[in-house]
Length: 279
Length: 340
Image (cartoon, rainbow over the protein chains, first blue to last red):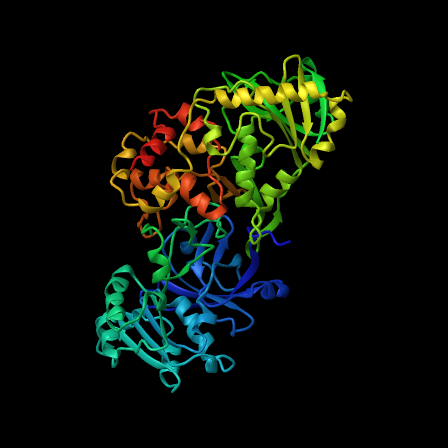
C-alpha cells in the first residue's frame, strides 16, 4: 500500500518564466517511474506537495489539466524556503511530488451548467486546469457557456499569455482579460476584476462561479455576484492555509471541523458560512 | 474473556521476562519523574506509580521520527528509502486514561483513505497491558467526565486490576491472548471478579473532579465569537506544555535535515500553542494571537474532534492541569463555557 507521506520521484522537464518580475514560474514534471503517473490521477482543483529533499515540501495547486498526458504542471511564486529552492532548480533535476491531495472543483455538479471563472493575479492556476479540462474535445459538450474574467495588476503579470491568446480566438469560451493598469503595448481591457465582472454581468441562470484571487479581489467581487443573483451554493472558491502533511493528520490547516487539505481546498460560500471564519 | 490471578510481587518479574521476547515499555523512575521507557536489563519497572509524566503515545507516535531517507546524487537529492521499523512490543502497565487515548488517536491516524503507516505499524505490533486505577491517583483526574473509567479495558489488550494480594488478569483481545502464557495458569474465581467489580465502583466514585464535557458541545457550536475567548488566554505563556504532555494531541511538523551527503525527512511533535504553527509564508496568520490558539485547543478537544470522529478529544488524565506553569485549568475553562 502506498505510504501517503512518500513522494513520487519526478524530473523537472520544463521551466517557464511566466511574468516579467520573474518570480512566478511554471514547472513541468515527468514521473521517473511511468506507473506513478497512473497513480497520480488528479482532477482540476486538487493540489500536490512539491518535495525538495533537504528543504521540505510546499503545497501548490495543480495547474495542468488531466487531459494533458505525460506530465503535470505547477505554477509557483518564489516566496519561502521550498519555493525559493524550486526556483533555483534546473531542467533535468530530480525532486519529489506527493498527491494528488484535497477535493477538487465539483465537476459532477458543474456538468450541464454554465461556468463563470473569475481569477485574480497569481491565483489562476487551478482555474487554468479547469479551463483546459472543460475545453478539451472530450469534455466541452458536458458544460454550458464558459465565461472567464481574469485580471492582473499589469500586462506583464498575466500568467499563461499564450493560452490566454489561444482561448480568446475560440468561439466556445468568452474571455475577458483585464489589467489594473496597462502599458503602451497593452491593447486589452483596463479595470479591476470586480468592475469587469459587473460589466460582463454573467447570468445566474444555471450558472456556477469559480472565484480565486487575492482577498481584496474576493471581497469586492462577491457583492457583484450577489447582486447578479448568484446563490452562495453557486459561488465556489479555493482556500489556502499553511500545510504540512496534506492528509488531515498534522493538525494545522483546519477551519473549524474541516481540514483545508483533506476536506478542501474547494468550498462553496454556503459551506464556508457553516465553518468558523478562521482562515 | 479469560481471567487469571497472579501474585502481586510477580508482576515485575513477568515484565522482565517479556523483555526476552519483546521490546517492553514500562513505567520507570528517571530522576524525579516516572516515564514510559523501554525496559533495559537493569531497569526496575515501577508499577506502584501514580501516572507517568509523559503520555505513552510516544510509543506509537514518537516525539521525533524519521519518515524517509534521501541521498545526494549527480541529479540532486533523491529519495532513497522509507523507514518503517516496528518490532513486536509490549506497553506494560499503562493507566486506563492513556489506553483510552490510543482509541482516540486511532480514529485520526487509521482512517480509511489516508492511513498513517508509521503509527499503525507500531500500534499493530504493540500489545497494551493496562494497569487499572483502583485508587484514582490525582485529584486532577477527570476520566469519568470524558467517557472513561479508572478501571476500564478501553484500549487494553490485557487488563490488570489490583484486588489486594493479587492482580486479576483479564485477557481482553486476541492480541492479549497471545501473551496469556506469561501470566501463569491460576484461573480467577468469582470471588476475585466480585472484588474487582466492587473496587471498580469505588474507584469510579472516588473521581471527584467532574467537568461538563458533553454539555459544552452545543455551546461551542454557537459561540466561536463569544467575548469569553477574549480573556481566557491572558495568562497563557504559549509554552506548549499542555500539548506535549497531552495523550491525545497529535499535531506534528515535518522537516528535512541534511547531514553530509545524506538526509532525512522527519516529523516531530508540534503545538497549536505556537505562533508559527499556522503562520503562512505571506506573513498572514489565521490564528494571530494566543486567543485564537486557546480557542483552537479547546474547540479541537471538545467540538472539532466530536464533529470529525464522534469522540471527545480528551481522556481526563489531568496532565495539562498539573503541569501548566500558570495554572490555566482546562476543567475551569470547560466549566465556564457551560455557563455561557
